[in-house]
Length: 500
Image 1 (tube, rainbow, N blue to C red):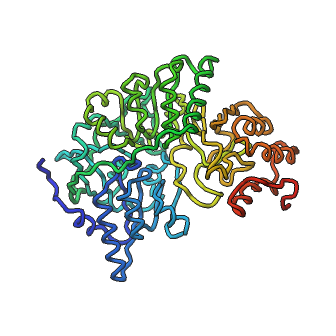
Image 2: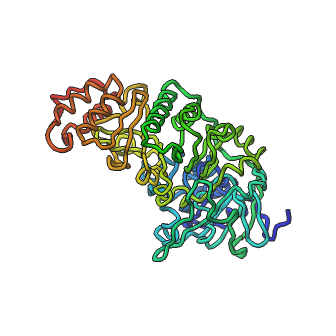
């Protein structure tokens, strides 16, 4: 391919970026995340630090990234500021130690915040592409994220042209940025398969400083095998939705599904695929994982709109080898559109996300362990939960080898309030919270979702907090958390003699 831009090595590209600048990276999860330039930036940062000079950058992405971006830069202590979501264990430690400023944001809100200038100037956009045109056209790869906004807002652009992704991905993307207030029209998406934008991003070619040639697959991992617990959660979700369909509370045509990331989400979708009482469904979601590929091929999933293809290497190879087929069934959109509340509400999406802990009121913590230590971030779960036709949160009823109950009196951090959470599901069962008052919700969650080892303690707590509209005690609400912090186990609480 003949390119009208300078060809740079990753090291030459990294040398152009200065200490204190902010970079907007493409991608959403490891899918579509640049690899060579951030690795080179990490090497440069180490050299600058060894020479006694400061070198840190602000990092904007779509969501989490691969090891070559977040982990490499964090290991080099090269990140000063990070938003909106991450999943690197190295970066997580630095965030929780106060070494990196981290702003946890709803993913749908990030592009608008960038355009409004809330996050400061974007000096560079570093974007992965599978093809380019002389007129400034860019064909993105497997994860869009906020790339269109970064490309438009950034002062300068570096493209990683990745030969690992075929140019035949052209046509799988639908790239659209809504106008900003005071004049903002409706987004013309009324079905998961509707197109609203362009298959490519077009920018001013003068902004492109250079192209770095790469040939690297996405740094996604193989997913863990399903466990009896995750399989049971998936079965419970599928049976609940099937019952709702039979009861007429879900239309006979069914409704589009949104699913979060992880092993539980994969098990839920696999179970729905097997349950033939549920008709073929569409997905309007932010991430597609391995479990969706066979569902599309079998016709169980008729169409999938997403922001990224977060597939294992084997599944990705299968999709790109049959790209003409999958382009008829998949659209990749920017996160501002894939997670857009207007569309979520219009389509009547059923949202399915996972939790760290859920309290007896139905409030959900999806970000912080023991109320203090950040895990990854809220991601897109809030975008969907607050606007869904029905919002489902699922998790195993225990964690840390059974020492932690994920069902607690009061969540130590609340990301999704009781007002947005419709249904709670664990491997123990289902608590349908719709139309229930706080006391009814608490009893349902204990009886249907808590692990048997913790039910009696939760019942004792509820018995001691019967007064008021909400059954809650400010002195007892965190007794289970205190017990774990003191002993490493939530069991054996003397509820009657807790500190007041």
